[in-house]
Image 1: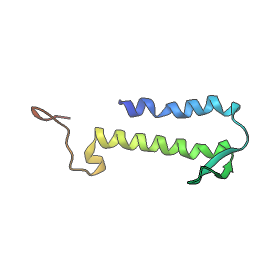
Image 2: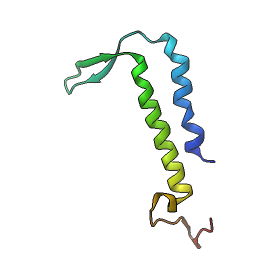
Image 3: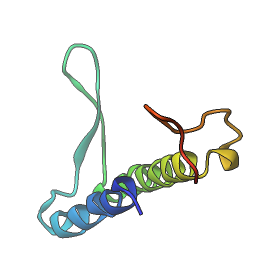
Length: 84
């Protein structure tokens, strides 16, 4: 498959393990001065994990099947183009 496909589920697994140890309120945004602007629930982190999964899947599709991403890129070696 690929490194992205293998590594993408790791943050979800780690979050699942660490969720029980997290406090009910965690800092969600810090301003330029280092002050916390907003607190939130750890449940709000699920969308970040979803974004990681979608990005990893997009990278996997884009590099494995570049025609699916509508890019002109073709993988090459020192001998020339690879045959996919």
